[in-house]
Image 1 (tube, rainbow, N blue to C red):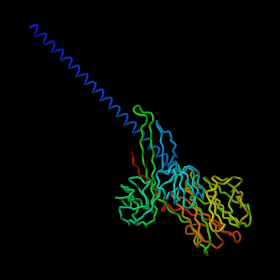
Image 2 (image 1 turned 180 degrees about the vertical axis):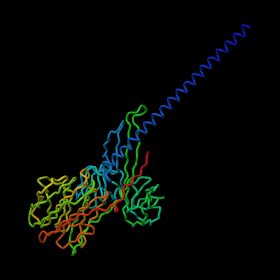
Image 3 (image 1 turned 180 degrees about the horizontal axis):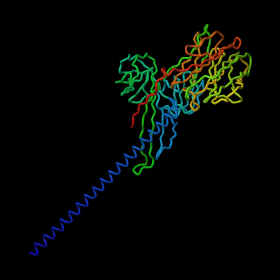
Image 4 (image 1 turned 45 degrees about the vertical axis):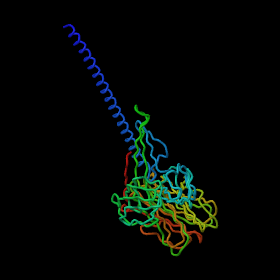
Length: 471
């Protein structure tokens, strides 16, 4: 009897031990699951926070930069518990003046060894690269500021017609996959991108409401793509967590043509800028004067009352040698040179200068040259111009020898105004459609200077479009 009791007691002890072991095992599993679940939750939370920071970077860059210069130039900007960095394929590391043949950038790794790039609105052909430079086949015709974005450009090699779903190009290096490319005024979505043969395939034509069209061989192909990287640096599970938003942006631009019809075929240089509005841009006053054989000359100009003022001064000069302005002032204040250009065959030059918030009232505009030359000065003041980002894009310059002097400058913002200044060998000149002549004078038999303004119709400008991928 006692023996049986002892045996049962032993079995009970063994059973109790087994139950305790099982309970301990279940507890360990439960703790492990809870810990893992908590870890996954924290990881997901930090990942979402990094994504929100990347989205904040996107909102910041769109608000604080103008198309297409969406880059923080390798700098990180703090936001919340982390920071963001916005990157384009490359950006300028130095100011590039008109006439530059070497373009300095942070990296050329996203570009083919030769081809095309676009900076601001200027497309440039380059023949060679180093790790941080492009060598241009011809000099830059616009000034470009350090920090401005550089994007790859390719060209159409076979006309796809208005319905072709394969776009054959010279190179796809630097283009993302999937790609949203722009050819002429058409946006095209292409999920597949191949390097050899260089082409975009399975494309959706007329993407997001743009109009499908045929595109000639040699037409430029663009993609404006940039990334916003959000990083969380203080995480209990990792040193850092990153999320990246890749954004493709197109801004349907009105290619505004400022032109003059000449009475005879002559050498000419035309320059134009586009003013960005703050409210409604309104014309104020314009004055001008012309003088031969001077190294300095002035014209009296009245700046009318009004908010968000700007003064634009156009300089047209020519002589027996290369003449250019060394300075322009209004009421003793220095103006800033936007750009200038020489005709390559004759000694004539045109320049654009500006002053934000010029003092109201009457004062002299004084232009000083490097040498004695014939000079035409034209001054135009306007109101309602954005004082932070006064220009839609960089100024554009073009030269030629013909009876039509024109320059095409992109317009992005509704309600913008275009201003142009021209230098030409003397002959009569009539402004183009929609333009209002502001001055038109000869400086002897050496150079004629003319300038005009033109409001840009809202119907000619479409909104910027954004597409995003998260990874």
